[in-house]
Image (cartoon, rainbow, N blue to C red; front, side, top):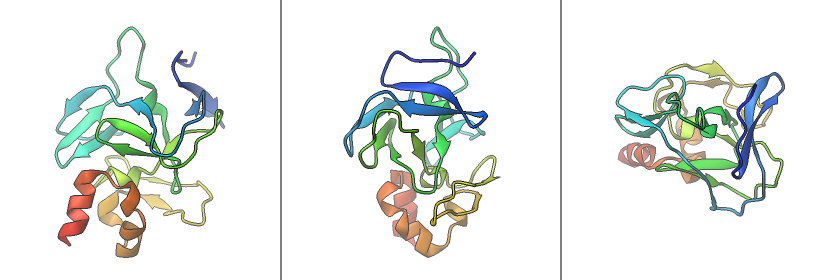
Length: 156
């Protein structure tokens, strides 16, 4: 049985995998979720990188089960982005929309690279992390980049 949430999102089965749907509409820049979890120095498949050596883990279980953000899928043209420990709307998100973020905007080097099949004209194909992107793609993603990746970009 999939976890469901009484707040503003639901975890559901989408095309045979888990995904997260908005249960209400969000305006651009509006916070959708707080990223809660254990902080770690090492990444894994289910962490989100918050700083150079800081990752938030989603595998801790409590009364509510795993946090819903664990199930947010990648998209090369996402409708959300991560700032600190918040997931924000990149543009208007409608009730019923699947929430996605671009993993290359938080992860310098993916712990578990994968092939993307999002179908976007901007699809990166192999998702390996920010470090592996061409300079033009790094610049295209600038508005969505987490602060630790912006610092890296500005040093080059």
